[in-house]
Image 1 (cartoon, rainbow, N blue to C red):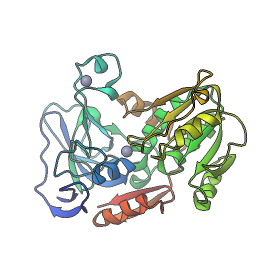
Image 2 (image 1 turned 90 degrees about the vertical axis):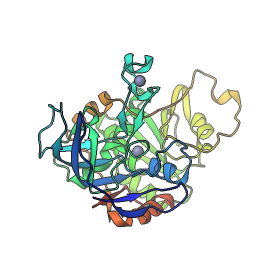
Image 3 (image 1 turned 45 degrees about the vertical axis):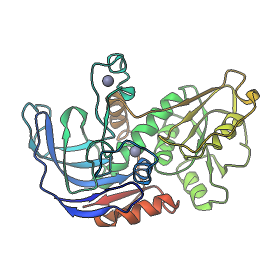
Image 4 (image 1 turned 60 degrees about the horizontal axis):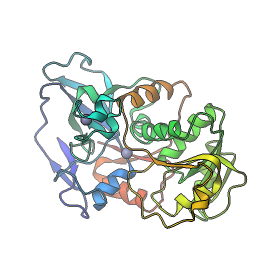
Length: 328
Ligand SMILES: [Zn+2]
Ligand SMILES: [Zn+2]
């Protein structure tokens, strides 16, 4: 198989040929047709996340077709289209797994981090953490649903069902999907982008935002909740200032720069500040059932697999509108 591998954090991915992976007990073998490029991949490659298996094949928004079944796999047939997300393994026996919070598992395995991922033309995955992909989406269009969509959806749920006026800080892959779900739920989106990023603000309006502006400007009205997707700690006090008493601020990213000190007064009034970590399989079941009903339309820029480094650079420098997707 062909793959792009990371040998050491802080270096470019290398194109390599590897033996085809054989499906072990409980695994499916998958011919990959598309893999989304997520900001978390950047955090793995840049070394912000410090526990990767090395070398590692990054990528956890994988769409492909089942080509072989390991022993004991009954849920999938050969030829079925499936998606493989970030949560690749959980222990099933820690207190978190037992209480329905497998996203917080003490012994997890994450795709493209501890488990080889989708920057390749083939992979194997634990069938229990794979999902059939229905809907009219092309394979490339479906890829961003697997993380930007899933984690974005979990963030939206955490922002509260009665949060009508919703701020979104950072308008990239996750935000453009969340905005469509939120609009479907009759919420109003207020989009905050890097100051002066007119392209992102106009993209946000196209995606249904009622207002889009600079992240250093005040919100045009009091918000019920806010989700921060940009990995910028300074946005936390900004978002706390924008939400009403009892409002919720959700940090949706896996990594963020340090949060500056802020006066207690902006948290006072029972405002809630929380993070969202990973996903549960139930999140995937819920969101992948909802997405075709809306239907979510993902905006993607396709790159050949061998141009993974270029796609990552485009994400890092904020040049993307929507999501980058690699095609083997
Ligand atoms: Zn566990
Ligand atoms: Zn991701």
